[in-house]
Length: 471
Image 1 (spheres, one colour):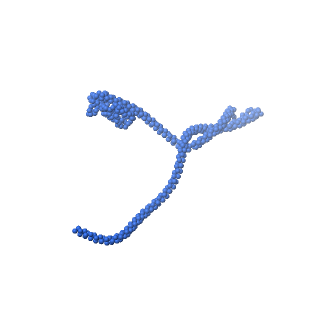
Image 2 (cartoon, rainbow, N blue to C red):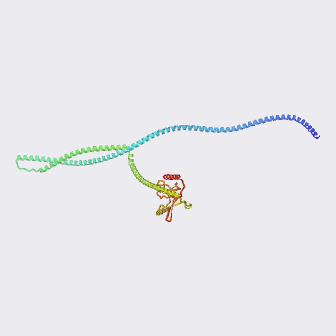
Image 3 (tube, rainbow, N blue to C red):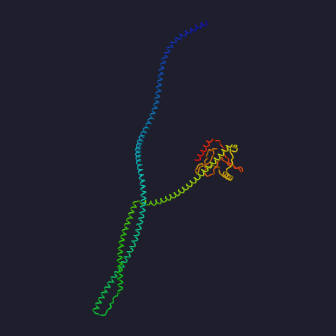
């Protein structure tokens, strides 16, 4: 029952609610329509707002873009100004470059021409130098010849001057003789006049004597003996002969003097011509430089002689050093051969001991087999003294005279042996691993341990040692 009542109540409630809902539904529909209209209006407004916002955003974006574009435009203007300036400078630089290029081409052409001319002038200079050397040689020869000729001419001039002075002296003597002859002629004329007067007086006297035939009257006249007259006559004749001869000699000497004056004038002309030719050949500056060049050539020749002497000395020393080097190389080869022979003997002994079955000693004795010594006691004592004073070294394998100290390792049949090649090759050879011991009277050689290498490897080691010894 309760359920039935509840159901009825529910139905009533549902009906009331349904009626209210229907009423409300009309209102709601009206409200919904109103709301739809509002919603449409609001949606339109929202859409418009959105459009306006979009437009605003676009406008703002455009504004920003405009600002950005303005900035870009300014930058572009700046760039354009810079580029215009750059283009102008570039054009100027290009024009300058073209000018420089043209100048460079011209310079290169000039350089090529100048290089060709330089080569041509170099060849010309070489030819001119050769010619100048030849000309200098010929000039020096001609100068020497001219000097000799000038010296000969000077000697001839001196000789002619001496002859001229002697001839002048002779002329002075002849003039003095001429004066004497003139005086004598005057005296002769006086004497002749006196003789004539005396002869006239004698004739008159003779005529008067004949006419009157009176005794002789002595005429008081200055008596002149015939002897004196004859003597004076002879003297006058001699003086006249001398005068004639002196006149002839004077004529001859005049002719000789004229000839010699002509010769002297010719020689002087030749000397002047030679001086002119010398002045044409070389200027005075060069002539002043010639003795300096001669002095420099002498100094250089002396230096060259000294250098040649030093070079010959050094060459002789080098030859001596080469001979010593060859001798030392021969000694080194002989020592090396002896060393190899001793090594081969020791190896043969080791092989023989190995075959005979001799046991090696322990580690305390350093793996050494003792054998009787080959050397005598005195030799061993001397070797011990040398070993105490000097280091044990092997002979140098290289044939060089002076080598730096190097440590090399060589594989032999028995063991790797370290040896030293020192600066002096004539030192006593000895092995570092080989040691000599003296116990009482018995002296033994300590050999290294015997290795168990195959025969092929031993042969390879010996060939390697021999090849290394050649270097």
